[in-house]
Length: 94
Image (tube, rainbow, N blue to C red; front, side):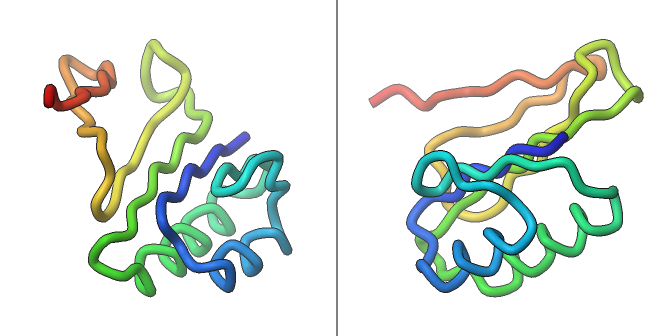
């Protein structure tokens, strides 16, 4: 299972993702694809991002206690922190 959350990404990029994933809300994509497809979709999204675009990828894994892993790319209003194999999300204060 994967979840992608994209911020300020063009409708064309979002349209490409809808070939593989469902978009229950604008910019939020969910689906169940292989690791290879997941990585290629993420590469495609990251490669064409504008400087103000951002994205977060969350996917199932058995490599840690949480049962999922995360990737972040571009300009998001969140920061990932990995602490002893656990992921934490930091929200900057205003």
